[in-house]
Image (cartoon, rainbow, N blue to C red; front, top):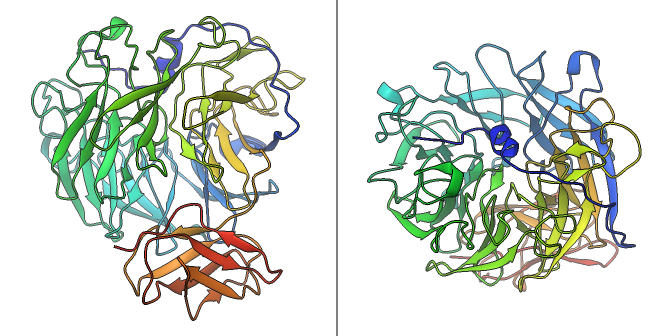
Length: 513
C-alpha cells in the first residue's frame, strides 16, 4: 500500500513555477520577527513547522523540529521578536515536535513528538510557561502499537478538560503497515491517563487512514471533527494509487466515528479536492455560521488544492480552487494549501499556501484571505524581499493564528536571514483591532475562565452576554483576566471594558451549555 507519510515527500511531488512580487496593499504590513539558527549550533532551534500559540502572558509559544545539533525546541517569543528557548529536546530519547502547542485551562502547554520516546514512536508531553517539562505518554507501549504510533498532529482540549489527538500509525487494523496500524484517535488527561478511542481502517478504510498533521477540533455540538489525507470511499486518486483520497469525519467523545465526506467523489482529478490534512494545525475551523471550513492539498480544477465548506451533516461545497485566477499556473493565487484556516474577527478566513516559487526559490508560499462566499485575495508572497535565501521566510507548512492584538502570526520552515533551511516567525497585520479570547470557549455557570487580551490593567467590567462577572482579577502583565461564568449567563460574546473606556469583544461567542 502506498502511503505519503512525509510532508517533504509531498512537496517534492509538486510542480513549481515563477511568481510575481507581493500584492501591494496599504493595509498589509509584513514583518519577519525572528530567523532561527541565530545562535551557535542552532541552540535556538531550526525549521519550525507549526504556528505559535498565545500564552497568558501575551507572548507566543511554539516548537521547532531541530537541526543537526538538536532534536527540536520549545520557544517563547515576544511580539517584538525577543526569543527565549524554554526546552531543548534530546537526540536519543525524545523529539522532534512537528506539531505546535495547545494552551490548556490549567495554564500549561501540551504537545506531541513524532518519533523517539521510550518505544521510539513518539510521545505526548506538557511544559509550563517557565520551561518545566514532563513526558506524559510514550506511544507504542502496547503490542504492535495498538495504542497508536508516531503522532504528527497536535492536541485539542475539549470541554471535559481532556486532550484529544491522532497518530499516523498504530491501532489494531492494517497489519501490513510498518509500524502496524492505519492510525488512531486517542484521549489523554492533563495528568497522563491514556485511552485509545478509535483505530482507523476498521473496514477497507472508508473511514479514513493515516491521519497526519491536521489536529482535531471540537464542534459546538460537543463532537470532535477532523480530516484524513487518505482512505475514504473513492480510490481513484491519480498518482497516489489505491489508498483513498481523504475524508472528513466526526467522532463522539465515546469513540463512535462517522465519515461525513469522502473526497474525489467525481473521480480524478478530484474537482472537490484531494488529500486534506497534510499540514500542521487544526484540520478545519467551525465558522460563525456553524459550517466547517478547510483545505485540500491537491485536487480542484488545476490539481493545486481547494478550499471547501462542509455542513455538520456532510454536505460539501468547493469554495475555491487554486490556480483559478491565472490559468492553473498559480502565479496569482498560490497553490498547494498545506494547512487549515482560521476565521478572524472580521469574519473572513485566513490561511497559507506552500507551493509557490519566487525569485528562484522553490516552495516559497503565500498568505491569503478568503471570504465566506469564496472571494480570495493573496496578501503576501514569501521570498519576495531583496537578498539571497528568502530572508522573509519560505515554505509555511502551518497556518496563521490571530493574537488578541489583532495581528496574525505564523512560521516558515525555510528561509530567514541565517540560511535557506532554518525558518522564521513572522507577523502580518491587515488593520484589525484588538479583542479578547476566552480559555476555554465554553463552560457552565461557576466554571473558571481565563480571558486573554492586551492592556487589561485597570479594566472596569467583564460581562458574559451582558451578565456581569464579579469578582475578576487582572494578571500583573495586564494580558489575562481570571473569573468565573456568572449566574444567569447565556451563550453570547464576552466583553471587557478597559481602563480607557474601550470595550473589547471576544472573537467567539462563549457557549454556556
